[in-house]
Amino acid sequence: MPRHASNASIGLKLGDWYKTMANLMVRNVDAAVVAALKARAGKRGSSAEAEHRRILAQALCKPKKKSFAQILSKIPPVGKDADFKRVED
Image (cartoon, rainbow, N blue to C red; front, side):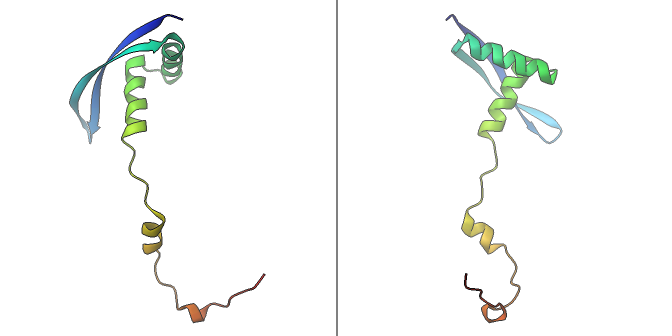
């Protein structure tokens, strides 16, 4: 299956303005991947380059997930353990 090179200029949206970060050249991309990228971009009404940027940003710039301990520490105190009846199954 033939492979294609894809060039994309990467930008990071910061508030209402863009800061150009770098140029990214992706080589040896499988033709099926390029076709899927173009199809997805077409469904969104955007260019393949814009879709490429969106996919990269979504995959790599997600906020870090909080640990279970961090989530538990944010639960407000609602009483003492003695205030709650334990039910045995």
